[in-house]
Length: 167
Image (cartoon, rainbow, N blue to C red; front, side):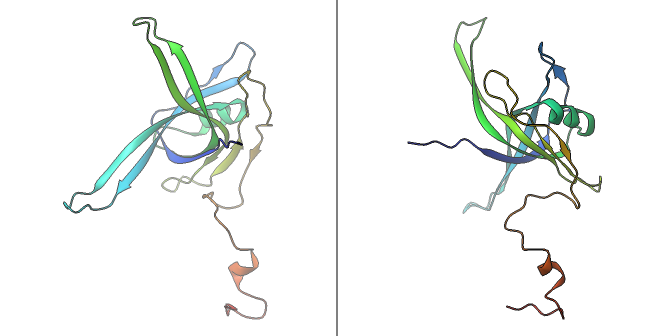
């Protein structure tokens, strides 16, 4: 049976990112996104929200740009895949594991009037660390937001010859 491993997250950075370099010279940063989960009112009248914290690894040019332009609290959209880390705890000898996201693309989202967003394709890495993406910067023409079935541009100004919507 085929499988599918793709994650799309929108959250806020929990700390300032720090750039590291692998022995092979590849830039990498590990960030954590805080993703708010809002809960509606329950029968008891209690409502509220909680946060989920997700660890994300960003590679190459995208990692450099995240470290240069993003700070704690900035909103970020990350696309990537889930990856499982396994190790043995040196103190207890117990087998440990952790799920994280390896970013394939990062988009800076507007936050509190801080200007235009930006989109970065991160290094898609297999477990050997071989890059399969360019990591080029691509500046958007307008603020970046998660796109969902955007209409063609001619709908933004109305049909030719008038402002009436044809439906």
